[in-house]
Image (cartoon, rainbow, N blue to C red; front, side, top):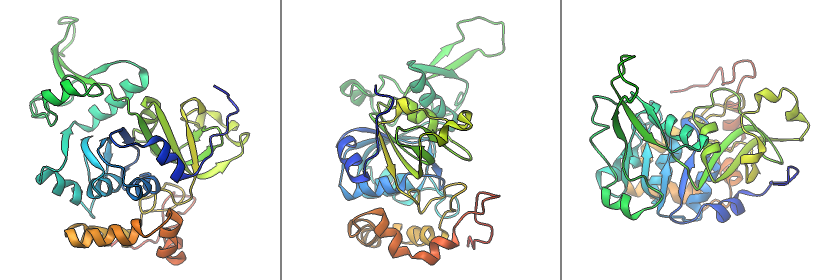
Length: 325
């Protein structure tokens, strides 16, 4: 690998090249925090279908991808955006109508699955989910597992502790690694080679990035290579994992990006209203995604005043006076 390789590209080309029909895709972020929404909208705009999606505890990104018909299968711990959607609306509707297959794990299990993938090992053990139906209820059938090489033969395995009675753990749950074809994350800072710095909580993004075969990074600030050499211990993702870097300010909008901007309660409240009805949701897709050529077009339609209203206070990392109702 050329350590000086310039990986800067535009979002349309990055999505077209790497996110293909039927691929196994992971997106970063948590509920309404740092979802890679510009990339989500581009996937929808390009009408890429039959995706096998992995997410930790995502919200807005998952709901819009599912609602747009891009997702065939989903493995996730939780899907929601707090008070706007305690459970993602289009996601729930798709599950109830059996339009997607879903397999659920605990939050900790999904973290361990991405961690195992990032470590290059096939599984990790945990006690999480012992005594729950997560163990017994599988969303992906044994037949699908046998016919799909990228899906583990079993959801998980409960195993007696092989090291005897020296501790109080009698049984453990083995959870399989996740190695997506593509992971997409949004970060505050990146350089042209793909070194990344995430401010605030990282959620499972670092593990998701390192577990993937291909990593697409969208960033608020594209920095000179020398800048990230200052305080290098703050750079969570090194360039060796990156394949594409896209400079796209407000790339997480309408979700929040700590230190840059807050989530937009006006947008999210209106989304939750329109997501409840099929016709309204199609109108939402048409007006906010399909009729927009880029994320910048969406931001322009939102307007400068709204964007300024969600700007983060630099000392706190979020908007102090934002009306969150």
